[in-house]
Length: 111
Image (cartoon, rainbow, N blue to C red; front, top):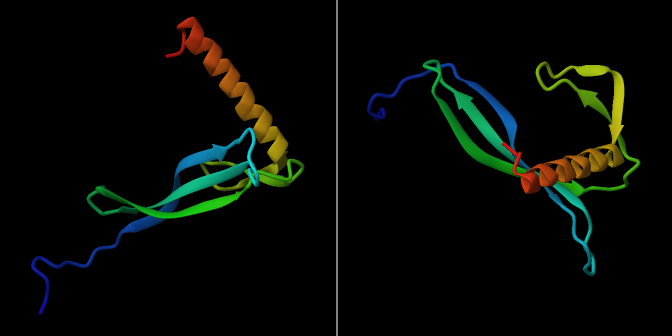
């Protein structure tokens, strides 16, 4: 028996990062820096409506800091030439961003 108003449509699907979490424990037995990506599956219908569902979580140690990876253009998915970054580069950038945002918050200038 067919479902009521059942139709066949061509949809576009992809997986994306819905959130990024970085655990930066100060102390604790086996505490380690970790990075966690909460992934979502997205489905865009022909009428442009979008359905988002939680997919999986990708979790890995935020180490070694010398680990190097290629940079990818988020708009195209293409490598950005031969440019690379290290986990240490990311750690420094995130720490610097935090310090800047905290200072602007404390000064009342954070939008």
